[in-house]
Length: 268
Image (cartoon, rainbow, N blue to C red; front, side):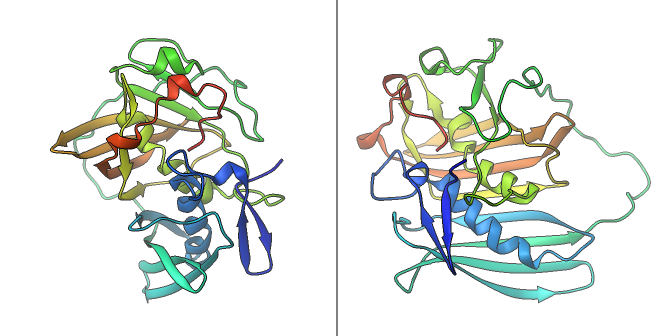
């Protein structure tokens, strides 16, 4: 199946699947996060967990050949920190940082943890090769109907992403990274569509996803004067993985009405 990129030597060539809803000449945040995750995970030692990845989306990534540049900031016995950049025409376009932590025994005692209902659709509802995502609004049923989903209810989404790179299996960390950008969908998709664009994405994990499906559920949204911060819970069929947070800017002049665009696959 066609992925978000094809590989040509050291370069990654975007496919049509990578193109943004906001502009036909730019890439969406979904493949951008995935490609940065691909670069960063090479620095994750055995026995470590990729506990945090932060992506700074400070300028557009164009529909053009792209390279990934990485650097280890520090490599310790229990903590490893690495940075990555996407490079186009010799210029850094966006950057990311990751923190890898060595796993170990849980400390003694009990601490508070919230009880959250994390809905999952029936087994086998999405193809392992990638499929149009499912959405759940409030107490409603899972659906791929954009009209039904475009409302002010709390949302959850369920994803089986296409390959990040055509012909290459997607690792669990790549699958988590490529899904992290969908935080904007579950947190900022309202009655008139989506009107906020990401300035960053931060994903925190206690473990990697199991299987090919990843869920996202809106946890909170706070907005004021054209700036909104949204947080979602990332999970799989086994339970929560961690959280994803986005800081966003109003993009009302280019509002995306998903209900009027049902012929397009909502992967971005």
